Length: 185
Image (cartoon, rainbow, N blue to C red; front, side):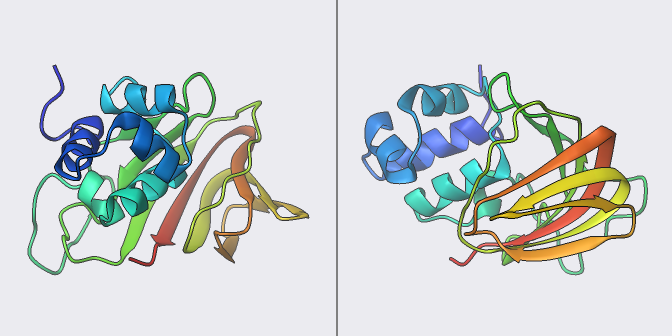
């Protein structure tokens, strides 16, 4: 049974508070209703772009669905002490492992994340409001941004407008990145 801290449970709670059906929320967020049902049942943890679409459709900050506790400022994460992992499997596609670094800072406007990415045959583009800043820590990362394609390596950074269709994926083995997402509210 899902707990109050689960993403799907939180989405369902806000959807019900707004009096929306799953079908209505799926349309508002531009998602398949079956996919939304799996998210609400905590069978799938969606990629961050989907979380952003759901948060916008529900009128909530992205962090509303990722937080489970409050920490007073400053929020410090020591090396090797990254908070719990949340997986995104996009069903049978995608292999992103998110480690939220801002979890607990309730008034934040950015989402800092450590992300471990495994290779994926699907190279599906996504887009959402906001901006992203990424630092490659290890491995190689394929960036597709509009018509641009670039392979980034450890130490490389990229900063882009995330409304432009984009894809980030590991190349020749896993990659690790730090990412900061800004989504206007």
